[in-house]
Image (cartoon, rainbow over all chains, first blue to last red; front, side):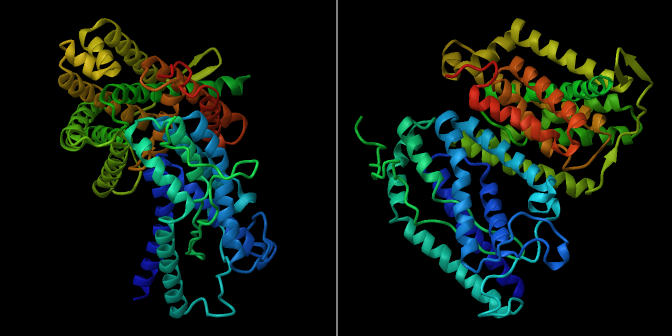
Length: 242
Length: 288
């Protein structure tokens, strides 16, 4: 049963990750083979925000950050980090690269960042990874090692995933994305307007937190796309008569 | 200076191996329109076929020929039983990439299931050491470079002077137009799979010879390097793939000597990303 509940936790995590990927790949037409690094940065940032400074626990691991922030701030930070990471990708995919080029560019970027993270130990403890990340809500509400905690975590993950699935149909990003779909799927290369939507879709669906000690996910569905620099809301330009 | 030359020597060998694979990959991609991520899987299958032949008591060079045959047969089987049925159903190119990724995993874990997860190596000597200026290479390494040069010359002759090569270029340019001009594109594509499969098997074996010990996961990062070489030069162009392989191969090995060996691929990938940002179609590519 414990095994089953762990599977359920991972399934819920994957559902949330797939929601983001689905929006990028299925709706906006961005083939993001680098999706794993969005998930990875979420896990790393959440860990860096939740952990105490690396001198704690006998200083057996090294990492940047260590702010001991309470839940849910690490998760919010993780989602924000995923969104920020999307910005350079937006430039790469939205402006310069298309189709297969974008897929290869993102794949290579993901492998590159993976190599950096696993080889540069001062950043996030190299390939050993960051351990003993505080479990959310553990001391106050649950005992982290109990089955009740795992049940609650799985239930929370499933609810989060369900809310994400439901709300994505009505969120501004989904509406914008849905309007992109015809032009993204009928042309082999996204047109200019479809690429505009690709950029907007890449940002809000940011990252899911996933680490052995932190088997949960978070994402930012509420950060609506389409805010121009001057603050005016962008009209969904896709599929509109040109 | 001697460090630079020594690392350049390693770079030349890596480039030679990579060039065979990159040319095969780019021809396959251009003519068949499939970004075949199972390419590395076919390389492994070729390397392990050569290993079986080698273990049976034959020379590794005989194994090389067997690997080419195995790569060719496996590639044709892949397209006949997997990719072609999907293409007939009108599957989008990017979906085929996912299918090829699935096939890559099936081949990798299939080999791991049969061969086990342990590293193996060919029974062969490295030959005597040869000094060329500041370069120090073994005769086996020189043979790898010679094989690569012969393959490059062969590909040049094929594409430039043979009917099949011209048909391949026509099919890559515009399949429908090629068909209306009387080119049997189906046959050209099947032959391309066989030919590039042979190159893939060859590349897998020389890669295994080069690294010494290999297992079912050895070519995984090499696939990313092949992709980097192909897209650095400009996909679909065999000469661009050769150039890309030379740049990536030299960049990885020379940076390994001067920075840290752990970061040698990082340098190669940074070069590719910088290139994609400046010239998205690649060094020799033209944007369509």
